[in-house]
Image 1 (cartoon, rainbow, N blue to C red):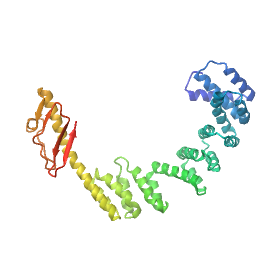
Image 2 (image 1 turned 90 degrees about the horizontal axis):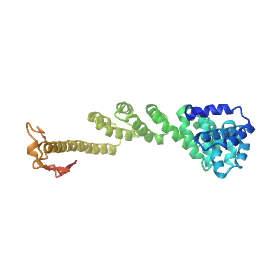
Image 3 (image 1 turned 180 degrees about the horizontal axis):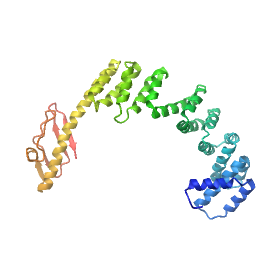
Image 4 (image 1 turned 90 degrees about the vertical axis):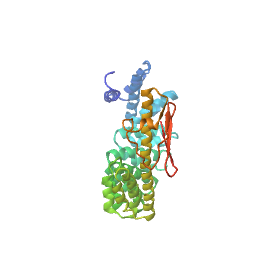
Length: 354
C-alpha cells in the first residue's frame, strides 16, 4: 500500500471498496479504529466513510452521531463527498437543512467539481440564491467550469434571469474570456457588447492584449476602428505604453483620441515621460562617476577622488557629456560617500545613491 502517490493509492482503494456493502464497510471501520495513528490509516478511514456515504448517505450521517465531536467532524466531509457523487439531490437537500453547513457545502462542492458536474452544481446554487454561502460557491464553481466548457457556461448564463447571481457568473465568464482571447473579446465588446460597458471592456481587452512589449497588434486594431469615443481611454493608455519604446508610433496612435481633454492629458504625460528619459541620462552619468571613483580608490588605495582624476582621455571615463547643461565639476567622492548630486540649469537637483 506504500507504493505510488496518494492519488493513485486512494484510487485503487476506492476501486477495491466498491465490493463492500454498508455492513462490511462499517466492520472495516471498526477494525481500522484499532490501528496505530498514522497518515495512511487516516486515508483508509476517510475512504471507508466516503464509501458509506456513497452507499447510503442518510444512514452514514446517523453513524456519525456515535462518534466523538472531533471524529465526526473529520469524517463528515468524506461522507458528504461519497453521498454527493451517488445521490447529489438528496445530499444537497440534507446539507441545506442543517443550521451550520459551510464545511458540508465545501465538501459537497469539491466532490462534484472533481466529477466535472458543474452544470448540476450551478443550477443547485442558483436555486438556493440568497443562501448564506450560495454566491461564494457559485463564483468558485463558475471559475472552474469556464476553464473547461466556456461555451456551455455562456449558454447557461443566457438562460438566467437578471439578478445578482447572474451578474456573479457573467463577471467570471468575462474575466476568463478576456484573459483567454483578448482579441476576440475586443471584437465582441466593440460590435455586440453592452454600450454602457463598451469603454471599460475595451480597456480591459487592450490591457491584456498588449501585455509586455506586444502592443503592435492591439494598436492596429484600435487604429482601424478609431475615432470612437468608447475607444479613447484604451488608445490613451496604449499610447502611453507605446511611447516608452516607439515614440513615433505612440504619437500617431494618440492622434485618434477624439476627446480633446484626454488628448491634451496625453501630451502632458508625454512631456513627463520625456523628462524622465532625460533624467535617466543624467543619473547614468552620476552612476559612471561613482563607479569610476570607487574603482580608483580600490586600485590606488586612496580615500578620496576628484572628478578630474577619473574623467578624460586615458582615464576611467574618457568622455562625460552634459545632458541638460548640468556641470559635474567639483564633484569629489570619499570612501564614505553614498550619494552624489548635480544641479541642472533650471535649479533641479538630480541625485544618485549607491
